Image 1 (cartoon, rainbow, N blue to C red):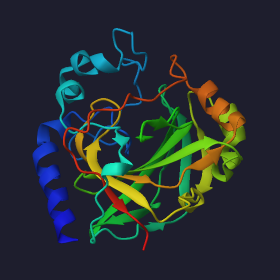
Image 2 (image 1 turned 135 degrees about the horizontal axis):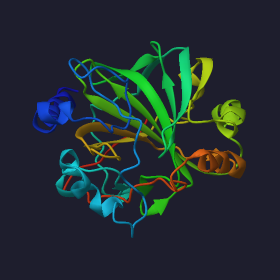
Image 3 (image 1 turned 90 degrees about the vertical axis):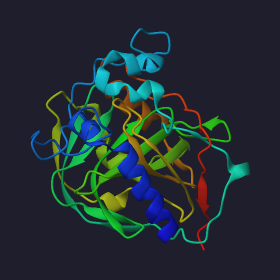
Length: 279
């Protein structure tokens, strides 16, 4: 446990510089806030594209904006291909401790994805003795992370943050199959979503099922500009299912040509990926 806490502190201190935090305007997610004390999250993501051949495509993100430079030259970027054959199984990884609770939420079309933001205290995820408060979740299709080179139909990211702006993201992968129960509750709202967003009332994040105690852990980055590094990633081992209707609704709701909104996998660059086997 101490080993992983030390790693987290090292990554946070080296990679989440004060300049990065001040310019943290296109993050994976987090609360909108004033610039004096908290991270600023912009809803206008139009300057970048997921189209490989585009002038503002993923390979060009680092040159679009000076605050996005790490998208191009960062060493610990996400997503990655998870190499199951080269997995380390340390003894001090433990079960994910989710202390989520129902809270008011809003469904928002951010142009590049559909996001569900909790406006109240939706609880936290405990990692290495640190509480990361749940901020929001959003969906990518196809999946951003791959397993042994295999890409899946969809991935949901549950974004958490500490008061010091340390970030932890949980990724859950989906293949086509039975409808996802959580998305089933949101389907009408997704299909009728406009740019103003929709208040959903109370939403319980516990309804987003992991389906397994097993997970992969590595240190990476946000998967959208500014691609801030120092993020603690947890990718759940269990691949869940989503219906084609549900995925089509998410894709059709997204504006600006981002029906496919998955960043290509990034180089592992010598990073170790760890497996918690669920004992």
